[in-house]
Length: 131
Picture (cartoon, rainbow, N blue to C red):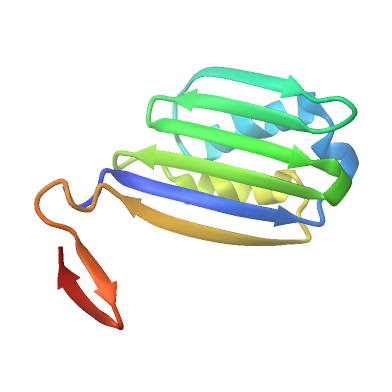
């Protein structure tokens, strides 16, 4: 095993505020993202904030999906972690970019568990060094 999984962080900007404040839409988008990422949804929970904003969390067999929205800024923070060979955190994040109609976004990937089979290496000044 080279890694335990992929952690994907997505910053979604310029999303329609009505979508970001619609708890039912955010929850359905989460479910569809789990399907698109070929993961297995075990449980979900969500909360509608007042006066605005939604948080939705999906516990998946492969780890988790989280969506936090700020309708007043047209912004959503997305966090997806999947482990195993089948599920794709990136595909789940890409679906949420579309479902929440982000006009621009940033997507970052982090390999998790790199040191499971030995010491991790860290890049310093462009050169890998062992810790």
